[in-house]
Length: 219
Image (cartoon, rainbow, N blue to C red; front, side, top):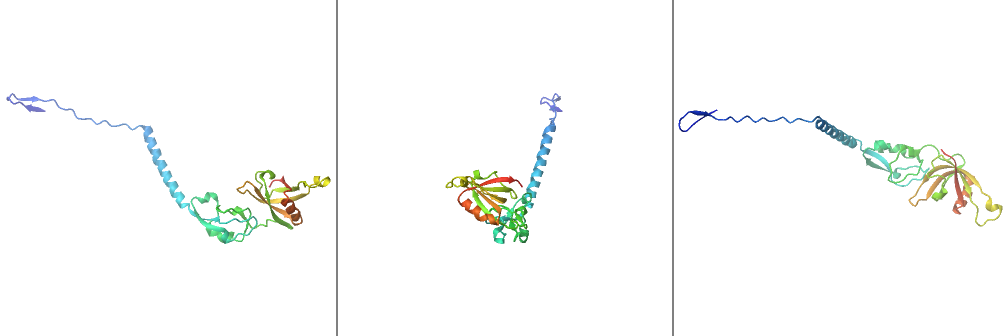
């Protein structure tokens, strides 16, 4: 590049400014991999959200307490909306007619989802049996939880007013566990299938708090 001088001495070469070179920034492979991973995770999160929304459905829940062995009516159940309920295996609300008329295989608690394992068509009582409920303290139960089908022995404890052989004698009654419920006060309610002829004696002993429960065979 040439510049003209004021005194007419001719042109003088001026220094040329070198062009600005823009240096290309290197992308670290690690950062590139992290970006790809974050994009993939974002896609998975969106897919999970869509799947959860699609999994929302109407299922049957327990509306009021239902004792073991009692027939279930429409008033005992309510339809609720649950997201992702398939993993819990609750009964869809559309199958209400299949549940009504069946018996509760276990005690149904309000606010819980109903499953098919909680209802049954099979008789809970055998021939010549009746169902009783015993209110027991935790220390009187032979295991933390007794399960349906467990075999137990009800043994009468000594009468504090009896003396001699009568005080030492203990009567035994065989029974089968139908269900066990743990109320909020930490007591236990044990539902048993018992021979009809043994019911009056067991009820009288339970009223006197003179029964001990022994687990003889686990289901």
